[in-house]
Image (spheres, rainbow over the protein chains, first blue to last red):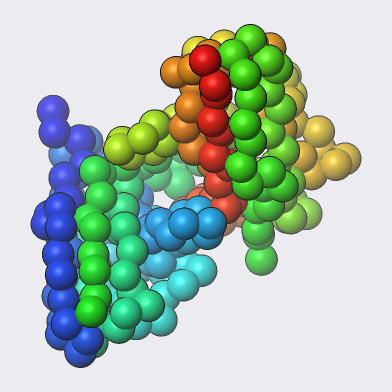
Length: 115
Length: 114
């Protein structure tokens, strides 16, 4: 049981380049999330998908887009990377809105550097 | 909009000292509350959670937290810390009316000296 799998683990981009971070979960969870983690800022929610077919903005959505490809996969796209997007990105999933107290399961993170 | 505030950014304690980390949230309705821990080099793991019932909840590794609704607080406690508790701790809130959106606080780095 792999849980939440993120790819890639590391990435270096030049300003203006684009890329997609991939996330897949094999726990049959309905809800999926993308967070970024920065020193002193904690985890900030970028986008989330409460259920397959829906996506919503979180706290810091500017500069990002997401796609809930199917129940398992939730990708995060940077169309034109900026140095301010240098961060560690975490994908997470949980059972869903029918169980509001269900905990998040996190992937191992993607460390992105934009030069 | 819901938000979460953790007052202590960096805490340094000696082994066997008692720990209390503050967490306050802003949301007027019913909430679900969580504490997560991130050990060095690892991803976040659930420490404990509250969603209803007894406001004093117990989690793993001797941690507990108390939900005080009138103070909008969910403080984390441990009577006696160990060196292995060195980690970053995050409080998170999920408004019951919008169960998809889980918001985290800024985090508190705990350093326990042996």
